[in-house]
Image (tube, rainbow, N blue to C red; front, side, top):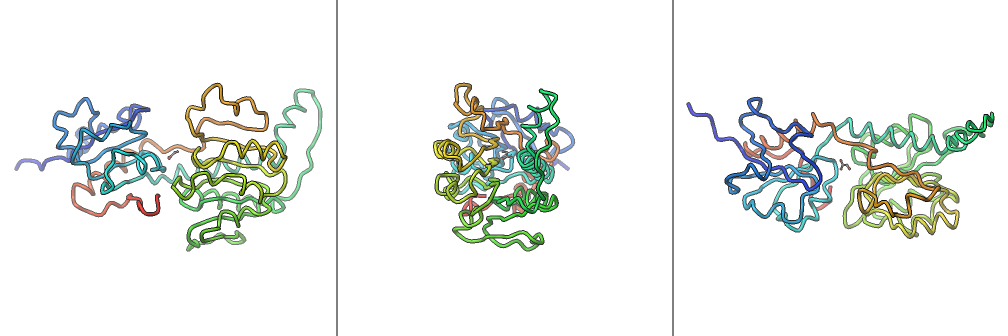
Amino acid sequence: MAAAEPIYGVLLSDAMDLKSYYSLDFGDAAPDVRLLNPDEVTNPDLIRFAVCWLPGPAAFSPYPNIEMAMSVGAGVDALLKHPGLNKDVAICRVRDPNQADLMAGYAVHEVVHVERGFARMQQSQAKAEWAPPAIRPPRDLKVAVLGHGSMGASVVKALAACGFSVSVACRRAPTDPVEGVDYFTGNDSVLKSVVGQDVVINVLPLTDETENVLDADLFAKVAMGAWLIQIGRGEHLVEDDLVAALDSGQLSGATLDVFRTEPLPSDHPFWADPRLRITPHIASDTTPRIVAEQALQSARELHRGQPLSLAISRGQGY
Ligand code: GLV
């Protein structure tokens, strides 16, 4: 009996070689799914799905029959706003527990670094100076987490486990709340959750509603001298408002992992600002093995006409 026809997908990225980075050449291990680079596609009409990271503006145009586009990351903002992707194309993401753990580790690291004064201790070390900082109990530090998807929930659990006082802005109250954590829901949850907080951690998805959410209004509500940890998307932050909040002392500093333009241009003033800690979008990453498994899963669900379990809601934007 002849084998059933495989389903064909295309890899679309202006930024990276998806096939080799994520080992997306399944070969005999999955003869039912064929993933091709654009230069390997002989009949674009056969392509039914795309696996993407920052696809170029015309990336989708050769393929009239795409039914599903998958991001190799948790964020799907680049696909949602892509002008070449029809609104009836389903969008899938990766759900990677490792990525949520990485995010939590980064957030806790930054909170502890700032709270314990590690930067100053490094200066003391250079001068062979024994200068212990004042230490306060973790529950005296108020930390707001904006966003409570898989990343936000993991960050909240890790912070609570360290004893910090945590407040969270979320769309819906969680079914498994962490004891002692304050959850704010509804439209103004973001602004409510940051009032008087010492640290604000942004893990929101980027949508029309959340773009520019880190602005002067929000900075005006936090405790004087608060610290921002920005691990969402660059477009969440109004850069001029951040600089003004730093200049006024409303914020004492910020950790920035994501930027409006990435890589952050070498002449961007953020690089030279000593009040900022800059990392190159490494707060988390998806695990290549899980990306490959979930690409296969989504392709097979599409092939079999099953519901796409990793689809996001276009209405909600995540
Ligand atoms: C990283 O930014 C992701 O979207 O997974």
